[in-house]
Length: 278
Length: 175
Picture 1 (cartoon, chains in turn green, cyan):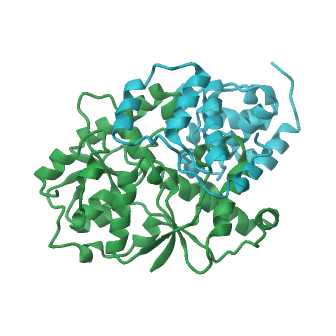
Picture 2 (cartoon, rainbow over the protein chains, first blue to last red):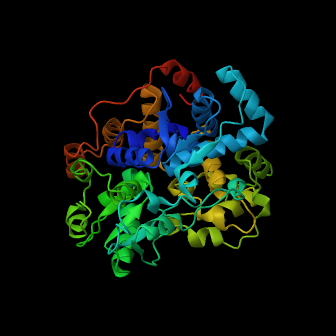
Picture 3 (cartoon, chains in turn cyan, purple):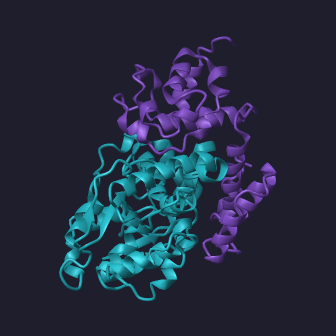
């Protein structure tokens, strides 16, 4: 299957280990990523925070440039939400479609569906791609979604993916803990302007993970991963793995993984080594 | 207390695309908010101020500036009010009248947008440096910055798009 790939700024820069492992995983399960040429930032949290028209226009340019006939794949939860909101707005609102047509010279093509990575792998038997039975056996982790499963009311009727990480990692042998930090927002950009507020939140999340007996956290958001690492100031911390990293390790496809794990501020290598995963 | 602005509710409804009059003030939004305890006016209070037409109180509150749009509130709202969209609207209206209640967070958003305008994508190192200059906070997080640079989580050069004209045209209003 071929998809138009929108990596977004985080995966392209600060979370390169997320991007690298994600590309390897997709290749392993037969998804061909064709990066959208000359894509621009989705506007992140800031565009809609202070200028909602600009937020729409920034996504619209990417939608206009994407080729018809194949879905646009995203993995960053923030990019996904920005894309889905703009797409929904275009579906519902004739003024939005006129604005789109006027700015980019092409009419809005509703066949260009925006698809998050979870939608793509939901229902797939990932264990069929693994080498050997239950490669993650013995690993106890806390699944961390942050705000990625929450959505605004207009997107409420779309399919949701609660429990997806537990379902897939469970078929690979890992054990998820039940804990209270799972859907607590990481504080995202307040990490810059209000690090005190984010440290309070992040410490609560990591502490809850430790108390539940998890050996690491697994997250599908690069922003969450960064905040959980840089703003936690507890004496004991937990490694925070990208979902894509642990999937790729489970499939036995992690090559040169030192390059990924060197980028972590809490080194996951002692844990992964003890579990025989690297 | 300033006077009542009867048109406020209509303006917020139009700009936000959601319907704050549906709120019966159960405060479920505030209960689930990670940052409510730091807000001078909490999410359900902002909605109430909007309903009552108390424009001055709503727009001068710094509470909406701490909202990160995580949608925890709107997911739980029994009346399907898009509360983060109301928070977006509070910020937009505060900016357009020239009185911003949280300068630091406003600076941060402007640095992100400035970076997008210059490169078409965000350049984190540049954003951090410029934000620190703007807020005259040069010394916090220096050790963190060094650790991130040494792990190449921060890049010296931006990733830049080719058709920058496309992006700059979008910024005519935002400045």
